[in-house]
Length: 120
Image (cartoon, rainbow, N blue to C red; front, side):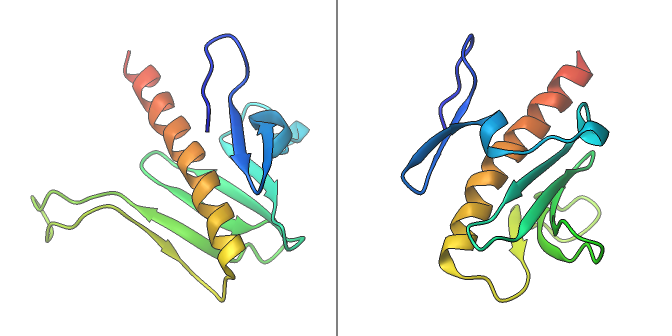
């Protein structure tokens, strides 16, 4: 992933380089939202949904099947300490896992940047 100050951020994946706007689809209901939709190499459409402290990936259909869930690290103040991790669900091939990781890195980075802007 390349980030540019005056040019759009690009994502390199599967031998291609696309801008974020080309890689992720935005629809009218989500123009300013915190959801990112992308088409998997397998033809399945996925949506990353950003929440205050996590991101979750779903199949973008009427079932909304959970595919991935990011768990923040726990410092151990109220519960047992553990590192952050990305939990994947279902029978996923290697290319799909690669695509999930690439998109997760962008979406989580964006979510954290938004949190920093909200704190200012």
